[in-house]
Length: 183
Length: 183
Image (cartoon, rainbow over all chains, first blue to last red; front, top):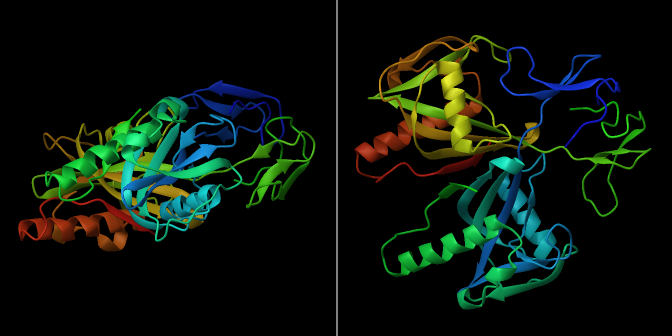
């Protein structure tokens, strides 16, 4: 986020420059000297399964209104990544899922985000659209609306999942491995 | 960080309250309405190996001046978690390491941090103290200064490593698994 005023002293004397001993430019207050570090944010969510199907939400908010996503959102201070992933799934899909394992860790350096997606299971096929979703549905692999995906991290996580699931069924993999990548 | 002024409009009219449609309190500007979200930060680093030894740095900066740590620091916008882990190892230990795999993912909900540590290897036993380190050394397992560790995430990562390494040597594990936990 571009800063207009120093949140520490209120001065409009912000400079975007490399502080002494640092390597990257930061917002530095020309009045009080406060250095405003900005760091990547973490997004946590789930790829939740019911039998052979996976749970997707159609977004009721911008960005990507109307497109499909895995339930996910910004990690909050005060929660673990697992708690955050379950909370987002509850909020967006009204689904109380059981986490399996951390599955994809995808960095998006340009926009300063880190996406951590868990595999999870629905104990029952019970879910509905939360406030941020237009609809929530279970999809078979062949019905996934690939052309209407909200985010590349979602497409990548789903593609990894279907590929790994096939490998597991063919006994080429014994379990879902962690998939770390950059987008 | 506690905010004193709105970084958007400069007003000192900040309220710490739950915005409409939200579930958690945020700094909201009473003048321009801007909601200042604060999110956990990510720390990335390496557990770097040379033969049977691991690389530790003694901190030359606060917090935890004089105590031992794995080379690690805040992930920056513009880099992947792997790039950040290698950069921190270069900066703190002047060591150009080869990343193996993401190994521990530890959330610290109370302080709003997410620590991601990679296993890595030193191609040669070449390293030296960077600006933020008093000294950098290779340690055998039996010489680890457990009582002088800077951070619990570092102790936990090292304990996981020595336990898993033993299991691998005893053929009880085939490789280092991802270790996800909360502290």
